[in-house]
Image 1 (cartoon, rainbow, N blue to C red):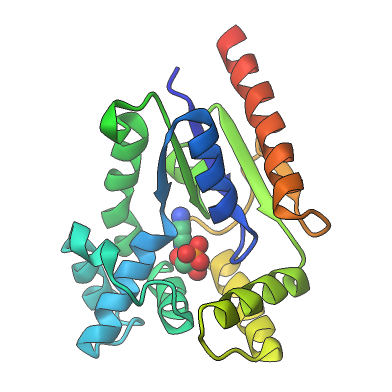
Image 2 (image 1 turned 90 degrees about the vertical axis):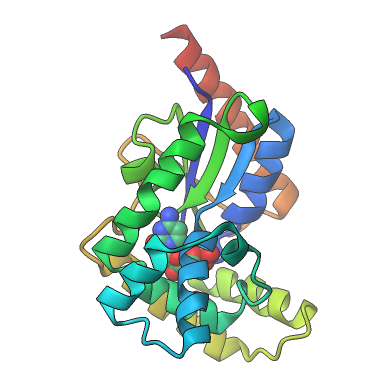
Length: 218
Ligand code: DC
């Protein structure tokens, strides 16, 4: 049994921070799968291409190189929005699937397992993962977190606009026909609306310990 932790949830739910910290705590590799979609979106924006164009988006996903994952603009709002658009294209998802599955099956640096965070890790990428956590928080709480994060990075941010974008992104990520955002049947729901990062991390750690023990006992 490879200890794979699938951490899914909507935009700005805090899953990235949790995933990174879980990887560190359990000595596992970490893959932010959103960065793959963001890299495709960023490439298209940089080339002046239309993220809605499925053909061009699929070409960009197939040609993705490790240097694209290091782009400095990956976390911007514009790139996030473009990522959400390209993520609705089945060919883009297919092109990125093998990379994600290989990462989980053969974690880099000789590590025993991996944490992957995204939207469809528990449902599509790693349906057999022994640990699946679906992180949720209200749209208002998520918008507030994202707003503060943008301000702290020195970007301009207007709260009502961030909230509207979060709602738009939720709708697009949930409504797409290929691998929509939804919890796997066997995922544990973790609502972080009322939790600070430490409390959320402790709760996530408990879920991981319990689920890994259950998987080992099987
Ligand atoms: O988690 P994030 O904000 O970095 O993700 C950016 C976009 O990528 C998001 O709107 C939906 C898409 N995405 C996806 O469809 N599947 C994943 N596994 C990860 C991200």
